[in-house]
Length: 337
Image (cartoon, rainbow, N blue to C red; front, side):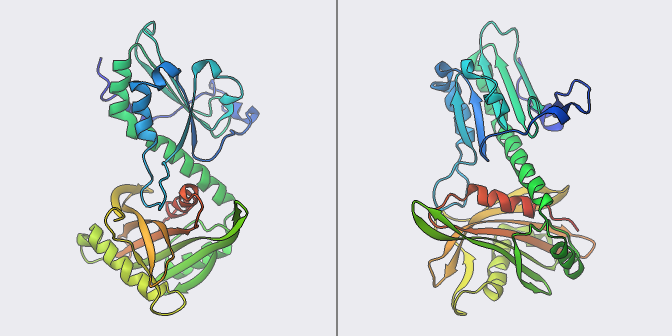
């Protein structure tokens, strides 16, 4: 049985379990569960062996750029017999059944199957071998599906809390649109550079810490495609942030962590249908101890012949950073021009 291309259709179509009734979702409650959490229903016999180890390998991959190891998603396993009404309300579910009585390999993706804002993936296989073949070919795509759904949920939330005055100011001054949540305040708004932050205090284990999420927008004339090489993007980043993002003195400024094992990584992505380069890494403050993860998106504005970068960073000592970074992802990926 050929499994290599089975998942292609899944990325093109998400089936909606609405029984042709476009209003059926009106009667569903909202999904539950923690942000970034995926429930995987799979019997212990398989979960504790090769089949389970294979799927865990994809979901337990570390998020690049965080100082402490954090997986890209949080997975929780339950045996199939525990798949009950309570669990069916979760936001992210993978149901895996391996049974030789299964007549043929089966998979499906359902959006909002039992509750609103839910993503459900079902895989039924007559053998471990066929399941492994499917996961080895499509594991990354399945993970990306859940990551995209998580980002969409955050984007929907921020869209309900956006600051229209800030959005209008950025559009008028910089000829671009970006979702601007009300909790973020513009600290710097210059000809070709914007800096906005959300600063607050958090308490963990009886201690209080500063927490800051921030994002930048900067742009410059497009000259050639070499502007999108990783080394060129980091060089530009360092120059811009040295000029605009300073600490207590001019000798303290933001730059990129380039130590071995911490170097930034780049991927080609789609930004609202446009080519973009996504970079994840760590920043540090020169001549200071502050640092943390960052994510940036760089794309080409052909109409205005400019390269645009939007970037988010987190400062949250002794705190998990995955969902804080996901917040910023949702903001950055809303960029339009």
